[in-house]
Image (cartoon, rainbow, N blue to C red; front, side, top):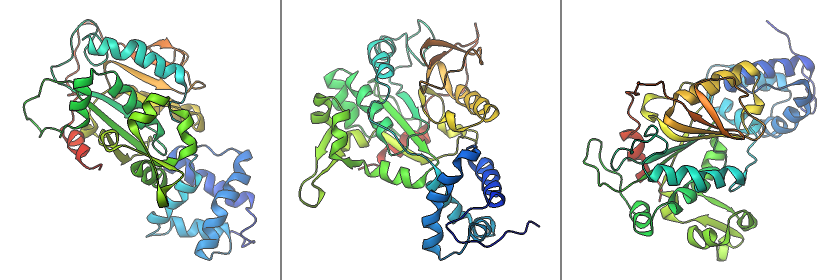
Amino acid sequence: MISIAEPSPRTLSDEEFALFQKLVKRLSGIALGPQKKPLLLCRLGPRLRALGLRSFGEYYRRVTAAGGEGELVHMLDCICTNETHFFREREQFELLEREILPAWHAGAGAGAGDGAPPARGRPLRAWSAACSTGEEPYSIAMALLDSLPSRDRRDVAGRTPPRAGAASTGAPGISILATDLSSRALDQAQRAVWPIERASEIPEERLRTYMLRGTGASAGLMKARPELRGLVTFRRFNLLDAAPKRFGLFDLIFCRNVLIYFDAATKASIVARLIASLAPSGYLFLGHAEGLHGADHRVRCVAPSVYRLQPPAGLERSRNTHSPEHASCLRTSE
């Protein structure tokens, strides 16, 4: 058994740091290089003080002991970086709105196979796989809603999802799953409340259409309107895990500015699982510094860090892109 010294919580020994490096890598896939030692000290120090612990060794024993699962979640919340913006990497959203969505609505876009119309009434399904505090999935929701004709837009925003197996209404729908490892970030994302300063990231027309300005005790804040919040389902999910079958397949997957925290082997395994979750001809959006560089021949690069799944000729995927369990969850946001 490793013997760990008991220094002040203001210090983190190399031995202790090595233990946390292995633990964080095993739990989340995040690779903490030697240069991250000060960051770990800064982010976990307040947690030690809150728990009245004297050392990082004592904290390590706390989170790895039986019954320490809850504190492990707190630890990962402290370590995860949740920097994000509305409509981040705007050139990707321009591609989505200018080319991908018009093609999909015309019947030759993602999820249908080239040249084949999508199933009548099938929702356009998107997954924000590292959604942080919600700016990305709500940006996607705004873009998808604005791609619809006004009548369909009102219908989608106010629609109650059908029961599993129920007949389709025939109108296109929108289904967005947003996941993250950080419970703290997900809590904020579900509240859909941000400082009013973030309004500058949203085009003015969309700001008026989809956001509410806080008053009184909520002055200085803005909140997404109910019709926007109702399109997004939030779940805690670890990218190291295989996506549950109930997630189904997705026409659009966004996993941006998170792969940079993983080593090459972990990144490759995550990308492979993301590609396996794409509907035929679906699109994968990565961060601007996260290109695949030809590493996976199942997808074709269509723009910087944007890839499209190429289904094998003559083969169709049997896995249903519609997920009744996910659709029913859309009732939860208010």
